[in-house]
Image 1: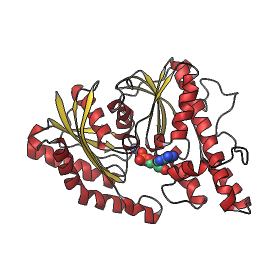
Image 2: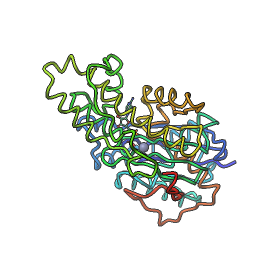
Image 3: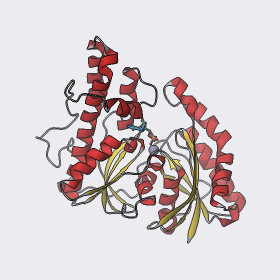
Image 4: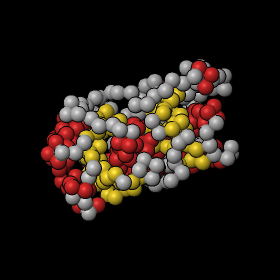
Length: 352
Ligand code: KG4
Ligand code: ZN
């Protein structure tokens, strides 16, 4: 059995976890997540502030995770740390601390890709959320549609051409006068919304799209955001219209995500769909996906909110897989703002 200490500091959560077991049966021993509330004042993450907050929090957060697991540094076999993608200054705090710890303890360090972490999050809670599956990763920074043939073998099918799904929620919330981050506010408001009051076109979704077309799996949300902006400007009573606008926006975004995910599952013969990223907290999305998958005997796995948003447990779970695969990084391990997910395999033209 392997036991890893995992660290995550790619954006505005300082998180540490202790994860043990194997990649196929990971066990979460502890998880501490410190969310940096300060960014709310600015309506978005301020990179330098994020780095400074990580610097203050990383040591106590790590100590708390070890204490919660009842483990000392000597009980840890290696340290897994998010090294990409994300805010470089934020990543550097986790990477530097992980390297220093590894050096002091004489234990290995390994860099984990943040998006690979999101793929593993659900497996910590659902033993059946294992490959092969179709993955939809939707967060504030990313929107990825992947076919996961096996752990470490990923086909990138679709991405966003502009805003990430969470970013679309946050920007739309802002122009409707809602607080940051706005995703959960839109979802809550939409519950009281009348789906017939407004209707927005389903972004990048039409029946004429065929496998092999660039837009078959890709998504784009900036047009939808602009459509909401025009509707907000045209409204003579925003207070009255807000829930209906939230509903129409969310319906359009969810319809597109569900349709494209189902295309990917169908094309690759997958019966399991795994959701990840902060937008996977959206119950309406999970329910719509479950209904669509259920119609073809498929199952949908969504992580609980704690594991959907950024956390070190998922880095530990992915770290177990990478550790078992023999990955050990050197003192030269660095942080990268952008880096392709490891283990990408080319998508055959026919399947795209
Ligand atoms: O994964 P995450 O914690 O951080 C990033 O890596 O970006 O995701 C944060 C994003 C934000 O855009 C937030 O608005 C969105 O997740 N989010 C939601 C919901 N809860 C969080 N979006 C829609 N509905 C929700 N219930
Ligand atoms: Zn994330």
